[in-house]
Structure formats: C-alpha cells, structure tokens
Image (cartoon, rainbow, N blue to C red):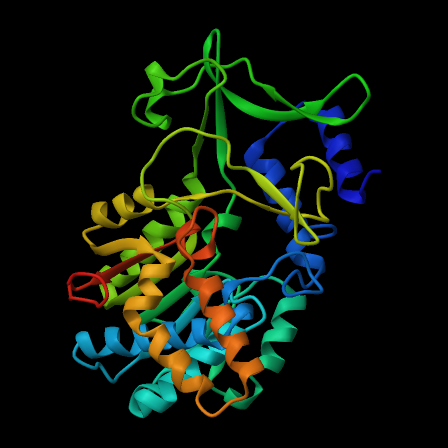
Length: 365
C-alpha cells in the first residue's frame, strides 16, 4: 500500500536524490497538498491520538491555574496582555484555561487578548467553534512572530514534538546524516549520506558512541525557542512547554509515527500518520539561558499537575456526582499523572521559563 505523499516523495528522490529526515518530517506534516496537519483533524477517538486536554478538562484547568499564578508573580501587569498558545489542537485546552482564568482572575481575563498560532485551516475552523463564546477576544496567527507586542503568557502542549529534527548515524567512517531514499523495490528506506558532519552539531560524548548510534538534533526547535526567549526578554512574561521527551541530552532514535492510536513504521504511511520525535528539554533550556531568560525548572507532567492541585480539583469536580462519573474522573486523573514507565505522567515533561526572573510554583520552591 502506498499514499499520495509517498509517491510525491519518491518522485523527489528520483529527481534529486535521497532527502534528509528534516525534509521528510516536514513533508509528512506540512506538505500543502498531502501533509498530515494540513488535511485532517487528528485528535480524539476518531483521529490518530488523544492529547491530555482531550483526556479531561482538568488538564487545561491546571494550566489556567498556572497562568494566573504566573501573572500574579509578575505583579499583575494590565497593559498589552497576551495569552497565547502554539499548536492549539481543537482549542479544548485554551477553552478550559480561559474558563479557569475568568473564574480565578476576572481582571486578567478582561484585559488580555488571546492569540493562537495555527497553520491548519481545518483545525482553525474547529478552534473557532470551540472558542465561540470568546468571540472577539481571540485572534489566529500563522507564526509566533505575528503575535502582537506585549507581556506574554504562553503555553505549548505537544508542539515541539512535531517540529522537524535532523538525525545523524554513526558509521565506520564516523557520523553521517541519516537520509530517506529508495531500496531495490522502489520502497522508501533509511540510509546514510557520504559527507562528513560538523562535530559541533553532535551531542557530547559522540566520539565514544558505538557504530549504529543515532544522534538527533533540532535546529528548528532551537530557533523557535530562541524567538520565544527573545520575546520574553524584551517584553516580559512566562512560557510553559509540555511534551514527551527527556531532560538529559543523549543518543537514540525517537522518530515515530502514530496511526489510529497505534505505532506505525515511520516510512509506511507518509501524510496519513502523525510523525513526531522526543523533545530534548535540556537543549531548549540551554537556548533560553543563552538568551538571558530564566529557566524556572523541568519536571514530569505528573508531578506538575499534582503539585498544582489536580487531585483537589478532581474531588470538587466529582462532588455530588454518581459513582460512574466519579470513577471516570479518577481514571482520567490517573491517566494524566501516572508515573510508571510509559505513562503520561512520567513520559511527558514540563519546562517553564520567565523574564524577568520570578518564582513560579510548582517550580522554584
């Protein structure tokens, strides 16, 4: 079985030779005609995966609590307030956040404008319906740089994992860029380039890596993080990032595809499966520090949500409800905070950065 995008990629390879993982990644997700995020709504049970905001309203509510606390720690600025999200999915998380912000800090809700960075026309339409009650308060943008100037409270959940990466593989001749080419049966396959690699691109310890080791670097992610950090440094604010990944840089192939809630070989269904890779939070934090922005800290999603009070909020949400409803709430919380290997609470990490430096619970305690 093939896909329309697979045929397009094969034609590109025939014309110009093997392509980088970066180019393959970008084509799979953002090709104007066949790109995964350009052509469909991937979220929820009817899509290919379920994100934390779709698991329970409690997730977005806890992020709303964090945003209110951050605004308070920044001494409650009132002018040119921007609440923003990059990659807002179906708009569910922002809806839950805004409901919580309006309840806890009505003055913040009243003064702030809301900005969503979204390139998919399909998802924009869904977000507009989800956030209809906030009509006139929400604006959509193609890029982060389009968000109007002002104090920024930014959140991004499962955004960086969808920004393309580069991969380098250790061969007998040293590290070479990992490429996508064609095998003898005209099927997509992985290979290695012939040109050497600038050692500055590789993680520490690359000289001792064994043959076959794969190093992942993400210049595009670093560039986005730099833009966000510069904005915070110049205008003030806090940014919160949640994604699956690791807090220490290392080696390993984390490129993966998901199709209909199951893992899929990354080259099997280009354009029809979601393509992601794990986020190197240590690298993102280093970019922020290099731009003179304070790194409040990193922790697991489970710890973050628990320390923000998700258990107490779940109890209040279930108070007076029937046992089935209460059991559903408990199951959702356990799914969000579970800390066994592979569970969301352990797999997903949270990074917060701010400028000027402020103490942000549950970080900086």
